[in-house]
Length: 500
DNA sequence: TAATCAGCAAC
RNA sequence: CUUGUUGCUGAUUA
Image (tube, rainbow, N blue to C red):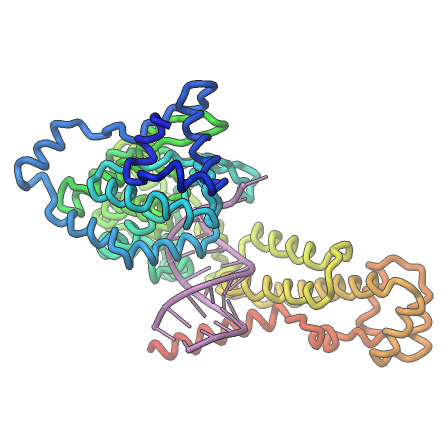
């Protein structure tokens, strides 16, 4: 108990009593003391380890505030920890519905957990000696089959980071380049894609496409902090808090790892910080007078000739690796003619925007799953889900400008869905009755009901020869992909007219 | 104009 | 036991 006093804090004086009847809290407290007492300690974690050299602190505290110490940041800190800001931060984290961090406190547990520790945590945050928990490391599979490491902060740390984000985002974002489109309010990937197309039409037919290798894990922390100090008027409590977050380390398979470089991929603050670091790249490209587009760690420079593109590619590789200290993904990065470029899952061909092949096959695959006859749910639900998916997907890929690819997919999907009904009706009698109900002639219905052909083959003729028409499917709640595409186009045009 | 929930996409 | 930012769509509540 004594050892846990430091982390649990002296504020909760009746800790023993109030914790007793809370089973979850109890488990937590014990798990923590366990790992500390050294009996099979999986990791060592010292919450109060001072991370700053003490002389820095003294000069900051004692000397009033010379150039080095920000007079802006104490105010920001107040804004960050104001109750309204913390509350919206909490709502946001809660709305995301994310998983628990390394302490195992889920969103449901959180209110209780926080009630016990609120005073202590807030005091520490204000004093500047709060020490964030390490992040929990897991891996998620990306679409290309590779794994991406993920650092999941504690629910509380997510809230604090979100609170910081809410205050810092408007400040930092205002100085970012207009050519940066990722992770920014009021910025769409679509605008980046359209920009590339516009450049292409102006004769910039060559692209230098550079992808940074495991960017989040490789960012030099010093550079992020330096950039932060630059914007926030020097050193101060906010910069230090963020520094602690960068240095919090991670836990994988029960053991603790320090983070010397990189930032946790999964904290609310990470996207903003990544833009902050890569803003240096934007500024460089602007200084060189290039046409370019950046979306997070993926950026494209557009040029008029192949020669120029190769020259720029080489010099940018040099710049990114030596000046920014980042690694380049050599497999993905290359000089390409724009018509071979894949960017944000779009392609640019004959002056038009197209869906990339991989995204299109993902789309078909998902539709295949949704229309799988072995998925045993009600037809209503199945239709609802496919409708929802098509609408959502088209909301993004409706930017594509090719119509002709949709009708065949519609046709294919309808055939698959007819197959689902066929499978659902199952027995000859039911098939017959249902077909009759849809207005099929007795002769046709009888023929179909008795057939022993496979589902897929039967489904081919169901639409034409029975009452299971396209119209009927529509009345059952199926939307057409091609129609949805038109709708999106139409909405975009009217929206454009309204702004103009 | 705010919330809540369901979902789609980019990275 | 899959985090995060941003953008978008739909439903609902005041």
